[in-house]
Length: 324
Image 1 (cartoon, rainbow, N blue to C red):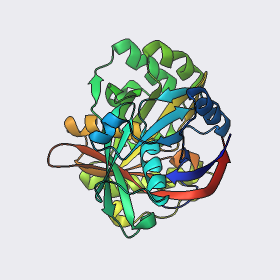
Image 2 (cartoon, one colour):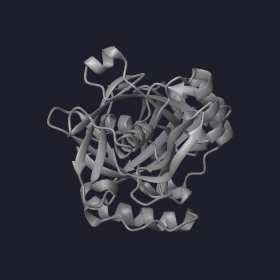
Image 3 (cartoon, rainbow, N blue to C red):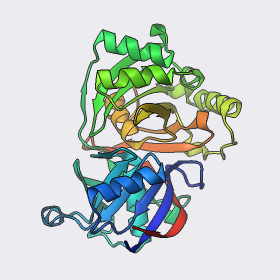
Image 4 (cartoon, helix red, strand yellow):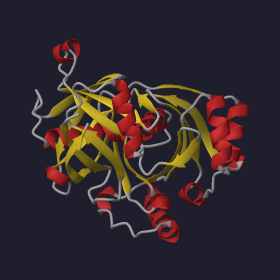
């Protein structure tokens, strides 16, 4: 065992402890898969990452570093908040990318570009955004959709659309009628835990999109609901980045299902689906975590080539070393 540099960062927030926590081991060289998995189990966070040099093939293709992403009980091919959090930690620790404007991350799903945009209100003066990986999606069977809707507490009249979504993780998404619907639901987590393996997914989520003229009302409703349900009072969001989409996401940790504070991979796949089908504009900010007392903010933008970028702020909460 040896001392290894370590950070714990908060992702999709510029304010510590209002986002989604991530443990980052900045030097994972020499660790076995079992050792990585054991440490991820010990941190008891939704994800723990280990940074390594890129493989020779990935380095030749421009990769700056390699990341291994572990949930407490399995390794993940890709996840959004570990991508942004690992990149921020790598840069903060002195990592120098080949391209000053972009970092290229190697992970199990392939090479993921991460853009760097100057942003005065973001930690470090910049905001990171990853290129959403290719999405495979399909319409659900009526039986699967109905069963998951019932477990979430959704009425059929509240559902606008539904899709199976896969960008590494296998997820299921619902588009619903209103932000108040999203925030008021009380899912049956035990029922979700039984259903999700049968349907072949590791997470299920839902989102509501405000129409352009109703956008100010969405954030107003969201704030009222958040105050009613949350354990803290989120800080105000700048008016120019007020959310027009409200998101919740439920995922499995072993035999249990829990609600995630902020989920990059789900927001990525939802954005690709919703924008492609005309349900959402090509640029928006999503709020997630309101029911948990956090203030997750996910910044979505589709560029001229139709690539969707998923951005968020990151802040360091713990900086030191770990014995591994």
